[in-house]
Picture 1 (cartoon, rainbow, N blue to C red):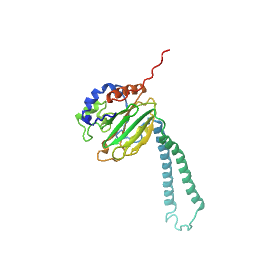
Picture 2: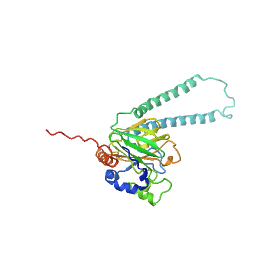
Picture 3: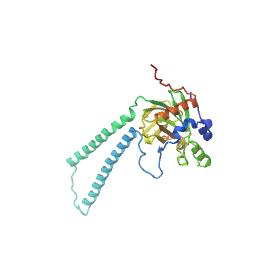
Picture 4: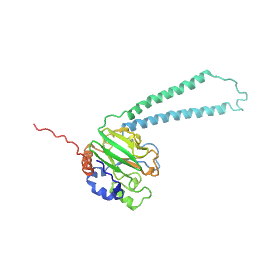
Length: 295
């Protein structure tokens, strides 16, 4: 069963108050995955996929920096050594076998090296394991819908505010949802909650146009295409509990810029507490509880 919150979009403070019991475990979470104004570089990685992806990016950056410096040095040498003043009588030849072999083999070796380091990262991203938690994600213009199929409940996730202006009402909505005005344009009225130390598999699709679900700190990005199911997975390491933000990363219409993603990574115990509250709130199917047998 899915319950839409479209009619409650402008009642976030009331909704937050009513659902405070299910959100208690999340309110004190540290914001870890958020952009910082004026900063460069990646967000701190929260998953092995992000660690591997950022490591590959750094490796390629070192390689291309070295290539650029080498090419600039060659250009500078050619300018100084072979200008008209230093070399009034230019040589006349059409081939230089050692140089031609070098400029063929060296790029091949570099590309093979890059490929050898890229493929393991690609396989890590695209080989989807069996998920401990499976979530269906649907991109809509311009909000996200999430379903937890095992427990048969779902909810919609909207940007807090209309995205146009930051005022006192929007700030109060943010505070009621457990954020501050610094999270304006990042925070949503309802967040995806996942446990740390567990494999989370997301099945993505779109209801209208192509969207793209991404969390930079997780190192994941996957298009949500209407009529198709695509997948991504991640596992937030234990100890990385916190709030992580992302954005729709596929141009999807006039409000594309106001389609954020909020994920709260919590401990297993807090996740189970949230799950029980969410099942009750959204009229889902209660989770099974294993009871030890008495002997």
